[in-house]
Length: 56
Ligand SMILES: [Zn+2]
Image 1 (spheres, rainbow, N blue to C red):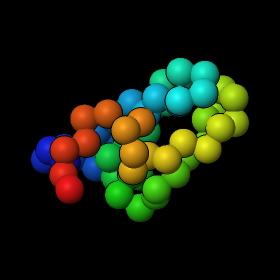
Image 2 (tube, rainbow, N blue to C red; image 1 turned 45 degrees about the vertical axis):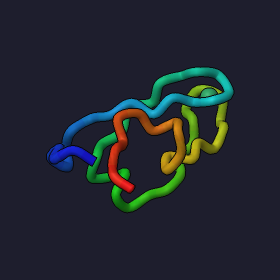
Image 3 (cartoon, helix red, strand yellow; image 1 turned 135 degrees about the vertical axis):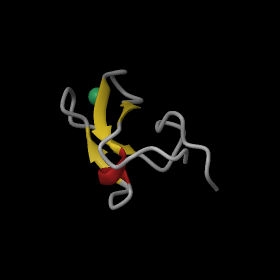
Image 4 (cartoon, rainbow, N blue to C red; image 1 turned 30 degrees about the horizontal axis):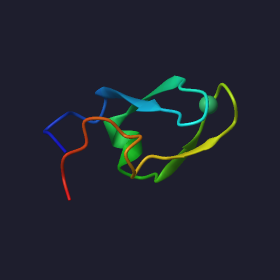
């Protein structure tokens, strides 16, 4: 990950309905999944759905 501050917002795209959920870098660090607020899909934020992730 880039050196974003914890409050920096990123987009996580739902693979099911393509809704883009905004969440924060600090939240991502302590979670691996989030629920889509649009369709209820569980989004794996460790996967390709998490945009701009670049650390191993
Ligand atoms: Zn969705």
